[in-house]
Image (cartoon, rainbow, N blue to C red; front, top):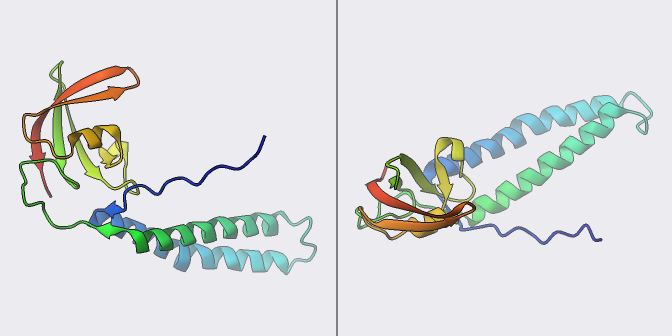
Length: 165
């Protein structure tokens, strides 16, 4: 059995200004803070002598590879992303960047913001534009009924509120 894994699709190249700022901050932290510290640690470990049995050296080199890989990814991804900062012409419909309040059949409400795939965070109620729920919501107006197939079966929500920051 092969170890090959096909490359993951990058997803929709959209991002909010807040998401872009977080990615740029992560890139700055990795390149200007963490990488110099790890490089210095590897240099100090290499100066101790035999590298074949030096755990600090081996671990440091592994950390450098991981940091460099993430830096390459962030650099390429930030070049490809389009920052969406303007409000849509029709704020009465759900589009990228909207905060949407949904109500299910039981009367329970949930509030989500539709963001790019690089910034989704379910704990903060940020869902990706590529998710089934977001795809079902985009273009819908207030009081619209939205049906989405979930792992537990089809679920119905009603759009109660739409807000744009």
